[in-house]
Amino acid sequence: MADGHGANGHGADGDRDRGSGGSGNGDRDRGSDGNGNGSGSGDSTAGREAVRVDRVMDGLRAFGANYTEFTRRFATWLGLHSTDAAALVEILYAEDQGTPLSPARLSERVSLSSGATAILLKRLEQAGHIVRTRESTDRRVVTLRSSPGIRPRAIAFFGPYSERMAEAMAAYSPQEIQHFENFLGTLRTTMDALLAHEYEGGGPTPPTP
Image (cartoon, rainbow, N blue to C red; front, side):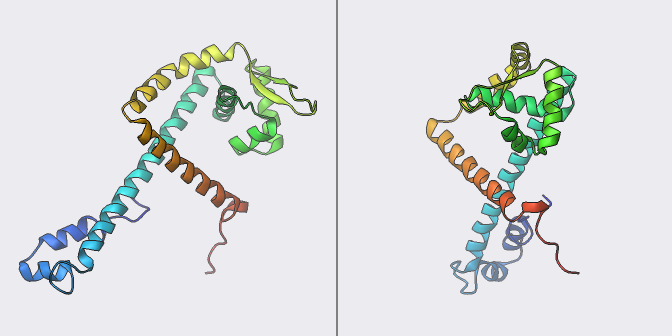
């Protein structure tokens, strides 16, 4: 892969060097003491771990890209702009979790300004896909809800996706799922921190030429 640690010097190249030549080269590659106890073994292990991390990150990126494609096809299926469909999916998902969104929270989830979100919500409302309610004791708080007509259509579209994902996850034990959940939680916290600090305002300061 283009980013990450790559294989040069740590993965396949390191294995090739250890396997070539006679015993003299083998001792040199294994470590300075010639007994296989030097840095060569450590480098090999580090290389394999680096390749494994790269594969995990590649898998996460591929899953994200595939989920984005599902959302794009959902948009086409409903005749919506992809951003509108992504917002609708966020509203539906939040409802399913029992934590319906406010316009401000939706704005954060879809990375739009408050003004752009207001325009998007107006389109979804006019299309009959969402309704705005005032459920909080603070009547100023607006809650976003899906309309009665859109939920059956969303279930019909995402039904095969949900079934196949459930089948895939069933192959893993509860303990393994817990490890996955902890791992993904750590990644999410790390990404949130990066966006809030190092990448606040668009990105790090460019290097001076």
